[in-house]
Length: 447
Ligand SMILES: Cc1cc2nc3c(=O)[nH]c(=O)nc-3n(C[C@H](O)[C@H](O)[C@H](O)COP(=O)(O)O)c2cc1C
Image (cartoon, protein in one colour):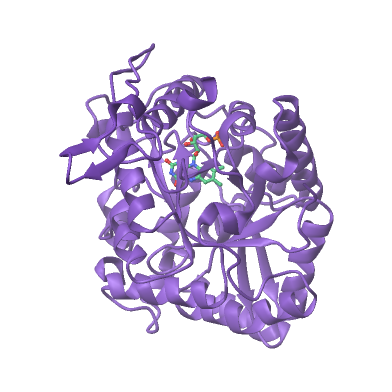
């Protein structure tokens, strides 16, 4: 199938926005982190602009390394993604929901039920962002101090996904006949026991909920190392990635699509949606003034600690001469390997000092950042789309709700004017809106 001429758009939501100190801005609701109406307002803004989905990242731990940074973080009082998105599903009609959940610290049976429940609650608008955990503090919450080795996490994830889709298939579409007359509720000829026995899991099944409306919720993946790309080529239908440079973004896109093709998959069944952090002004000056104001909110200690985290916990920037140049390489990390690579590539290209790199990480974590007028931001997005570096974008507002409002009111009309973004939702389910096929049931497919 040919690629449609229009890009897909997701909304990556953090309670206050992506710039760490954004929560201090007077426009950000103080209790937004635990106020479903705050998130409902953001989802309504995105749905009204015909975005394809709301995306919630996740880490089952406080991510800061010490009290000083926990004190300033402005984020550790918020909802678990599946819970929040389930609540939002009854407050919206068309927009999809991408819930991040790690395969490293979950059990497939629990997670298959929860994500299937979200798909039923939302009438087929759910997706699962498959991550393997990227934060070293998570292990302490699940019995082991050390997070498992990077590639081994992907091995576990491969088996995990197989069990999830197997469980979602244990009841065929029309298995539940609910015949009051005869008293037969389920046709057990359409019931399949999974009986999975693997390295990491043994799961009998069946699941105790009907097959999800979409067959499977959309499978999303965020991980761009070699192991991550291999995993994405096999399973992902949407890939979230950090690609701040056009050329490496095109290379990443081409590699991933080629790997997926090699596994018999069609190009339009795996959508690459890099993150973008836009700061919109009516003039370039206005946009950069907005950025400067937001940057002024973030404490240096918080910035330094965030940089240590996103460089993979292999540095301690509190003890470094910040005006010295960033080295070309760092020790390999066991956390998000791809991001360390992206950040070092950016630093090398621009001859950055540590101080400059810390600032960049605090603003964008290495995602593409676009600061300018609506037309300039639309140019950047359309250029990446037309040059096959992206099939769409996961929009990461620097501050919410104002940063999202700016984008919806100023950039979306520009994208539409140029014929690159839709005016309304095109289908009932998230799969239909993304042009993704509905998966067959593996038990009946075999028959
Ligand atoms: C764009 C992007 C976003 C990610 N978001 C999360 C997240 O929300 N939660 C999480 O546990 N891991 C997240 N990760 C980490 C990876 O999903 C994965 O868990 C693992 O750490 C390895 O990533 P890598 O293949 O990029 O090295 C993210 C990775 C990328 C590339």
